[in-house]
Length: 356
Ligand code: ASP
Image 1 (cartoon, helix red, strand yellow):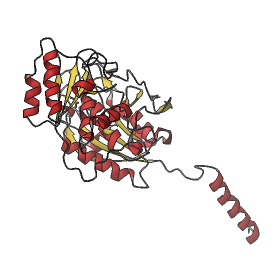
Image 2 (spheres, protein in one colour; image 1 turned 180 degrees about the horizontal axis):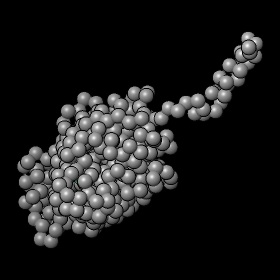
Image 3 (tube, helix red, strand yellow; image 1 turned 90 degrees about the vertical axis):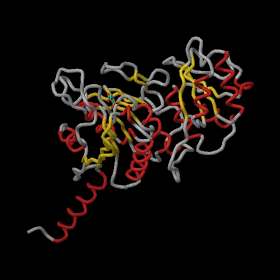
Image 4 (cartoon, protein in one colour; image 1 turned 30 degrees about the vertical axis):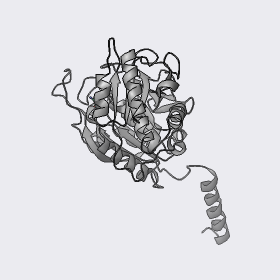
């Protein structure tokens, strides 16, 4: 029989090992919550080789069960926020999703969050969350170009990689991330560039945050632009977002659509301009008129990459316009909607476009 003093010695020695060797004696996996919103990743078709399919057919538990390998990376539980094609994404789902992410992130036993979404508008939802969720914990979105029933479906590996990144503490503090096709994108940078190709997302100006291969993540840098805890935007007390429309510029454009947007009640208008946020003199004149009436008008570009600079070919100072910097029209629109939650000067709104 072991003497009492010897037993005590070994008890203390074992406790010390538990303290100094991280993870020793604990097989506990990080807790990751999966919030499902729909999209092709949850889509289904009646055959594995057909183009036609319906988004948002598979529920969150089925989606998790389809990738049992992910359970070795994290303890997973799912919640269904919505089950829609992301072409139908709307403010109601956005507000519900953002609030739930904030609630979950505040829970001490939640280490990371994965959000499944459609590819059509994932860049908008990611950027919206990047501006309004208040956490340094990993918040990782993922999606798929092929439905769950397709030959070579891309959803399962994207989901696996997203769980791996969400369970990786090194992913924290990098803003909301989008993991798709082995790449880790920042919310401000990514954009969809192909309607059908699996390799559709690029981060043309700001570059990739990292890569992930079969769960093995490598991070190169943090995101450029204020985000999450560093963002001045919050949804506290917000039940609706101001209306802002996007109008694309083209040859022979007149001011009629700009006037119609103002008549529809827009608080802001974003122009997807040609080149460096340019448009016809007629459109510029209509925009300057609306700016005088208090509608905030932002010049962005229909060109996929490049910055829209202030006072380059257009005299923004004289016409009362805002330059979108490197934000695409769809991201400029949602940043403007958040900025317009309170009264601001044009100078303050331009600062926001420079900082985010
Ligand atoms: N229309 C689909 C969606 O955005 C496309 C996709 O998920 O790839 O929900």
